[in-house]
Length: 290
Length: 332
Image (cartoon, rainbow over all chains, first blue to last red; front, side, top):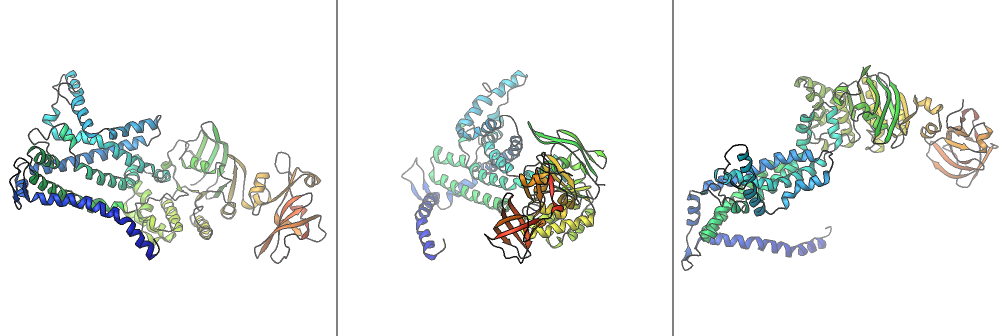
């Protein structure tokens, strides 16, 4: 990249992929914006036209909207908290020299390989089901009434299932970060009189901030769009108790067949994601600089 | 404060005995250097004293008290690591204050001691920087600062200068020696560099394959090496070791003579041909192939004009000859 001509050549070479990616991004976005201002219902295809902001106002005035927003944030925050706290603890355990370390690590990572709807079905039907589930028979065996997870604690159940799926990812990233910590630093802290807790607090945790930042950023991107787990388990219910923004959009698009309103919801979701990203980058983005 | 005694200290990793059993006394205020080739167990020995490794057997006493089972923090020793092991996310000030903070000292006392250490080590203007913003020599000083604020019974240095360039190494060597003269605290220093050992030590411990070959002051080791290993290890360039018929003439299996104890002299008993002459300005080191003796290194004056292929006669100073027996030990 030294000379003028090599710089120009480089720009020409990367141009096709940049243009392709730009088109890939801008066309769906433009279409969504377009539809969000139009009357476009699949059940009455003959009625079309501009509706101004009405799709947006409907969405914002919908009784489910603020519930969906708070559920979305609850899902993101809850899963992040669980995966990071337990991810750090499991990574600390896996970093110890134990017999069968290799297979153990693969076992810990394996939930990540299970497809989200499959994982959700397994948890719903084999563990949390009030008649067939393992938790139900445990409760009955101990003389308690089975807990109706999907009915009484729908959001908590969804958060738990999603956290189970994402825990391996967090563990893996944090474990690799932990392995890059020089043992001399730990030994120096040991000589300096730091006990196990202080070594974790002052040496290990600061070393992990960068990895934790990466986990938070990547997981937030994926968690804002969680859909399959809710679709296979609670269907957003009971009522709207576990409806998130993506699920609400799905309901408008596929169940109510109102593309205009769903598009407006989509644009709101894009704005929400940008607000979250802004605060994330302001809050923790500085940890990404070396 | 600062007397360390090792009694039959042993260390094995699995079936491999790294240190088969060492007895050593380190007196208060001494600067002791452990020197030896790579893998001789000198770092392991230091880590045993620090408490970073468990001993397999034997007793480590610090100031007369058995410290063998004590955790590192309770031994009252401070260590400077080869990689410095600074805490990268803390400022220099916090790095130096860390052991004091862990000890729960009042903040005012912490600040006083950090300021004092920074003054001694010329770090005052760097206190608010991170280790990543410092040069190698400055990092080294921060690591030393972190050690001195604790006012330890003894300092342990694990090859602290091996990551520095040659010029900086010489100046840090002097700084550490001066620090020892100021603080008068016991220091144990591990290195594979015999120049560091010679210039810094009050007492050198030469280690080989986990055993102590010889303990003594630098000049004692230089003038009276106890065996072939020490004779070959201490001194640069190395002592010439000659065996065969020439050694038998002196009633030994091997004889050794240092390069400065051979003179270029017409009519000398050893006739040879110069292979290589290294002109350093002050000195010239000649590599001379002598018939029936072998390749010898000879130190000559800086003005000598001998070149590759020139014939030369050499005369050893017989009173400076070292004689070694079949077991490699020096003969009286």
